[in-house]
Length: 200
Image (cartoon, rainbow, N blue to C red; front, side):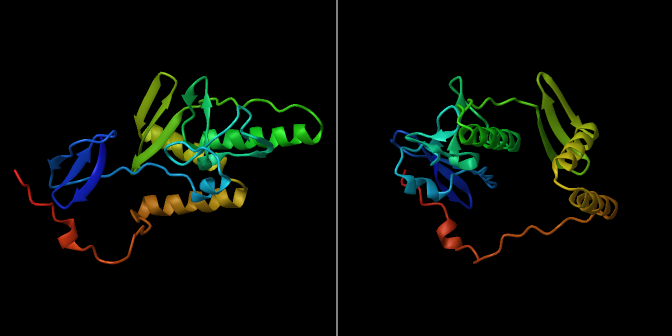
């Protein structure tokens, strides 16, 4: 099913292959948007996946032109038939692999296929709270948050960046302040948001 309409008091759904729509009434609607690739992919004239990404060769090169490599949100990468998750660690590994492959090509050598190593997952979910997994081990709460903060700082480039982020986090933690993250624009047209009249 895919969402075909979002209204103030519900959503409408339709089967992916077409067919009759279905309405679900709700006072609260939450939408978790998917990731779409840059429109640049369409200019390549290549077949794209459903999210607009470019399927790549095992070494992350462009099909039909091994001088061009595609990584990040623009690349549809799979390994052993399984899609590689669109996470920062996967992209960082792809970047290192691509850099090494470019050096190999410049030296007249053969490129190596990309292999993703899952080092675990961490996500902050609130003040001093996070969730994480490492293989079959899962953890949450303050310990997960502390590990998340440590890993985040380690992967920042440069001592100055690490220090500034650490001080900023410390200040925010002590003062309970949060940076303002606002999406501003035109006021929504409430008439447009009204659910259509049911004809049953």
